[in-house]
Length: 288
Image (cartoon, rainbow, N blue to C red):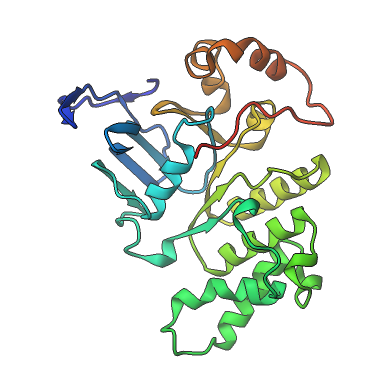
């Protein structure tokens, strides 16, 4: 694994010895996300194995890797949905789930029931409910936060529109606005560019950059290596372990891509060396 220091002693996982890899900590900014020697599996099969990375605040980070690399599992660990078997995670200095205001999640579009009768404004205001007891109504400040979030994603004119009537890109913006309305410092986005056209993809990236420039940290699961270097400040390359983390130029190296993608590396290298095309070429899907 590239770019780190501080080895720790081997440990046992389901009766087997694990030799920890080098931990990664390359961001100079204060840590927004700290993953320390995290191992988690289903049964006795580890999905993430001794993963360590420190992500500084104010970065837009692309999480890349092949199908089954552990990308979605990492997101679930950061959200506190899954608890590591070994190691720990800190979100803005807190354990996951201990402070709901620190982190927000934008799911894949395929995980949402778009036929549910709800307006754009109602979806975005849902981001404020976690800040109040369930019996309390939203305040004027909550309405203002929702309105500002819709404005940031250029969806103010759709407040009263049924969310199921929107295009895929518009729906993605609405769920990003809900996360922004929550007031979170850290946003986790699972494949936000999946299934949208090139123009919409560029528009969403522009919005994400504005969010980053407001001081927030974004971790984005991404499947298309041909656009990864242009879209993200840093890349986190996963294949069960953290293979590399850093600026795109240091992560998208031939030896690392061969380690992660194996026989497909020739096509990957070719796609990375070409000018961006009108139709980006996906090179992997999100893991189960």
